Length: 465
Picture 1 (cartoon, rainbow, N blue to C red):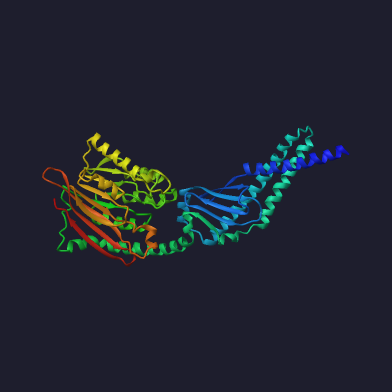
Picture 2: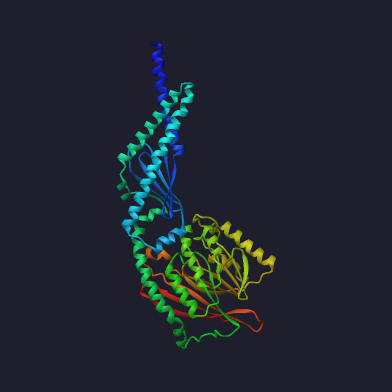
């Protein structure tokens, strides 16, 4: 009788160990990857947050929903986006229903893979825990494996039977994705507006040059003089594709020699946004870039790889005979959009001042994203360029002209979040050599388009010295 009781006790302990071991192995080793066109995902299961499915899209945040009634959480993580495949997808668009069907089919393949994988690891876990019983009977280990398989199968089938994907119609959002409910509708509206605006800007920009010639109050500077040069100052494009159409027309009609961009070419600095950044190469002009607080190491890396781009960060370069120095916003060193503190700004300013002193580099232009940074270099160069606050300005102080280009992309998606009309602005800088063969700024032309209504203004500021 004692032996029977002991056997029952050992059997119950073995059952419990096998079940625990099976679940432990499933949660530790059953994560799997699957690919849906350009998107690579990883699926994991964790013993936490009863009944939740969580979709993690770095760095934007998470989408969560209560989808099932079992004590596990499914975590789906977007790991990578193949930009080449994505470009091909965009060239050959498919219908919304085809996209849904594609995702459903691939997700079911992923689920099937997880199911068989989980059963395999559950069997291993169940058998492995039988070691604690110190049994030499092979059937004990086989029994542990079978118990493990049944435990995992029961958990997974219960999850499948109770799973309700419609729960994602009312999900929870974390991080930047908290904006998701209104961003979708806003993005659809933005696409329509961008298409209209691109057409309007092509017409307006092509007439800019002729209209300047006809305005009596503003005499055109001699663009054919070998001692003169035109530089286009842009800033804060914020992923707006319409900005590139505007810029292309300006550089072709105004005989621009090169471009200086004072940052925030993207919104979140993600690898997906770098596909838009590659439009810069199509401008086919030297492009000086100083990163802003919305850019990132990924963006800077992509910009550096473009053949016409010179990225400045605490150093200088001579372009078309004009010495230029630039410093990136400290926030661009991180993939997270965290505003830089005073200590970080002071550190970058100090490094740049040390560079100017050590290298004896005498710049004509110093460029930075934040106006607070360029203000620290008043008197160090005749021209200081910046952006950041989306508002054009031009001031003179201490022997320097300080120019803020505003936003060449009309603040991107932020333009749709405000009732205020934020215009597209670029600044055309006219440089000439003086009697000492030094470059001096003679005039700055502000070219402005007021968003959707297409109203434009042209203003020339003559620089007196």
